[in-house]
Length: 325
Image (cartoon, rainbow, N blue to C red; front, side, top):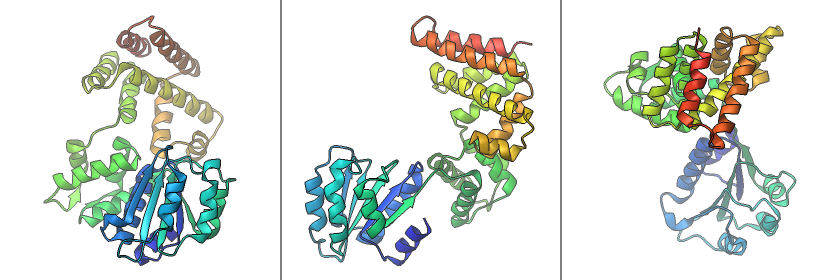
């Protein structure tokens, strides 16, 4: 990504780029920055293609044409099937693109064996943009706040991430809310985060599982009813409970094998704060309880899908069972 950042900063572009990976937010940011740097706001020199129904011949003709009273034009093709055999004719075009054309392909996954991928790798630049880790997201978030002349301690940044998660799109929205809320405050604190930030469903499930693990039935059900009040579907909540039982089972099993927290994190492939929470929650369950909880969750999902039980009742019964002392 460093090469991509430098190209945008210096306005020195190759003819073809591929932004590929799971981090949609960063791909969108880089794409917008490239469009702005190349067109200077003149949308006459910007063409956007999206989806699978794209006329490859139209893309080729567009790429060969000259920009409108400017040095360069940009063509963006996102979430297409151009990296299949249908895009092979584009692979032949890449080395022959006029200097005035910059093509940007934005995809989640591509076949690296394909001709188009190889052509871009040879003549252009490929930026692999995957989901960022907790540390990278924290550094990025701190920079966003700094650009608005706001500071935050490491502890409060960790608290923010543990509450909101590491999805950069969601976190970006929460940072914007914090900046507006603290317009006259130079330092963002925990109480500010509590005042304006919204916990995501995946994070709020931790609160529910906390109460279940402590066998606090009333509070566990209160957590569930709050989720329902906030228009979360019972089935979606059930899926998250099932996922959480699975994560707790993994954490307890790996810890039981003598692994340290760092190794458990690598093995589970989860963020550090998620693993830390799972280890703590798993201490309040036995292995057999977690196995049975996962089994019951999956069976409840199946019964709901078959119409054998009301979704709300199914989830309530599951919560009651595993929060009973």
